[in-house]
Amino acid sequence: MIGKEEGIKGYWKGNLPQVIRIIPYSAFQLLAYETYKKLFRGKDAELSVIGRLAAGACAGMTSTFVTYPLDVLRLRLAVDPGFRTMSEVALTMLREEGVASFYYGLGPSLLSIAPYIAVNFCIFDLVKKSLPEKYQQKTQSSLLTAVVSAAVATLMCYPLDTVRRQMQMKGNPYKSVLDAFPGIMQRDGVIGLYRGFVPNALKNLPNSSIRLTTFDFVKRLIAASEKEFQRIVEENRHKQSQDASN
Image 1 (cartoon, rainbow, N blue to C red):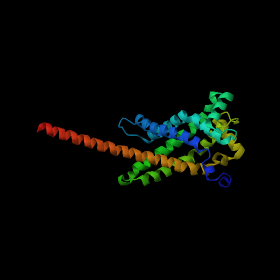
Image 2 (cartoon, rainbow, N blue to C red):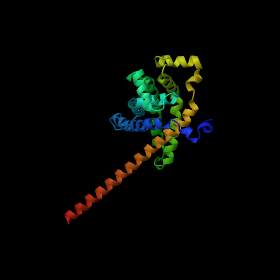
Image 3 (cartoon, rainbow, N blue to C red):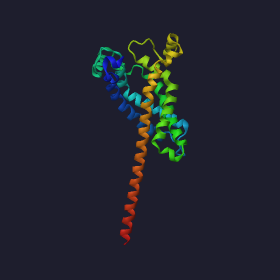
Image 4 (spheres, rainbow, N blue to C red):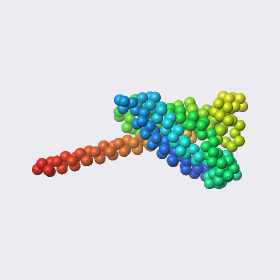
């Protein structure tokens, strides 16, 4: 239907707002995760499973809080045909609903993203760590591990995401998460909590997998570069010592 009416471009309609949101969101999330992992390390410098889960949860909430207004604008732009640009949505929201409208549904969003990122990142790290050394350095292993971790996290946490989207909408009938869960179940049954799961999974799995795989690859690349740099520094220092002694 979309292809016939709007052509190939129709499949990318509204993609720019998503790109504008996802770039800072991913950057904050991955940077925050590495930072929180350092904070949650134990006295032995090891990171426990609980520490990984906590780091992931905190990273997810941090990135969500920082970029949340962009997510609200993106959603409003997608569902309201009366708006054409994000700036138009933002000005209308400011005029009619105030600054607080940019954070409608923040609580459910934090509650939904915290377990998702916690499970996703924790499984990814633990599975990668459990692989034989020769496989840990392979991009294919990172990609497969990322797909598995994203699939498990998506299946576990999707109902919270459903509640989040409901509460972001203007005029939603729910006052809190505790109000939204029984409300959705009463109206649509348990299946209502998983409405849109398949399209979401088809979008989210490659998105999350590519992001984690790319980040893991870049980390390994940086680590290798730092190691090579240290080797060169040591060689130069050794040569200088030899020249001085001669």
